[in-house]
Length: 179
Ligand SMILES: CC(C)(COP(=O)(O)OP(=O)(O)OC[C@H]1O[C@@H](n2cnc3c(N)ncnc32)[C@H](O)[C@@H]1OP(=O)(O)O)[C@@H](O)C(=O)NCCC(=O)NCCS
Image (tube, rainbow, N blue to C red):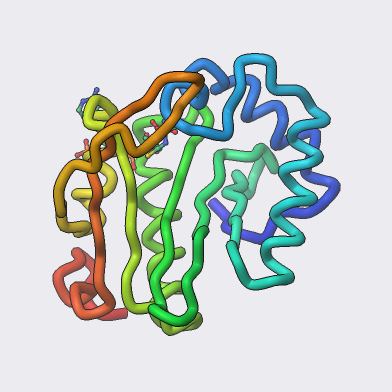
C-alpha cells in the first residue's frame, strides 16, 4: 500500500471505492449520503485541497501499489494549532476490509502528526456499535475517555460517540515503539 495526497485525477478511482462501500459509510460517517455522486467526490477532493492549503486538514489516500485501486482514506481534521490537537478519521473500501489496512495506514498518519506536524493530541470518535472501528482505535493504542452523548448527527439520526485520544507521550506504548 502507498499513502499519498489525493489528486484531482483520483476522482474516478476514489468514487468507485466510495460507491462500493456507500451503505457502510452512510451508517458510520456524517459526510456520507445514500445518493452520493461522482460530483460529490469531485467536491470532496476540491475541499481537501483547500483545507490542506489552509492547514486545517490533511487527507491521505491509500492506494494499492500494484493495481492503483484506491483502498480508502485516512485523515487529520479539525486541526487546532494553538492546542496542537486534531481529529483522526479513516475508512476502507469494503473489499479490502480485515487485512489490517486501516491500522497500518493510520499508524503512518499518527507518526506524521506527532513527528512532522508536532501535534500533541489526536482524537478518534467512534459510534459504540462500530466494533471494527473501536478495535482499530484500540489496536493503535488510543485511550478510551468516555461517551459523548448524541454528539454526532449521522444520516438524520443523533448518535453517541466513544471518544478516544492518543498523546504524543503515549507513542512509546504503541506496538512499534517510538519511531
Ligand atoms: C472500520 C474500518 C475502517 C476497519 O478497516 P480494516 O482495514 O478492516 O481494519 P483492520 O483490518 O486494520 O482492523 C479491523 C479489526 O476489527 C476487527 N473486527 C472487524 N469486524 C469486527 C466485529 N464485527 N466485531 C469485532 N471486531 C471486528 C478485526 O478482526 C480487526 O481486529 P484484529 O486485527 O484484532 O483481528 C472499516 O471497516 C470501514 O471502513 N468501515 C466503514 C467506515 C467506518 O466505520 N470508519 C470509521 C469511522 S469512526
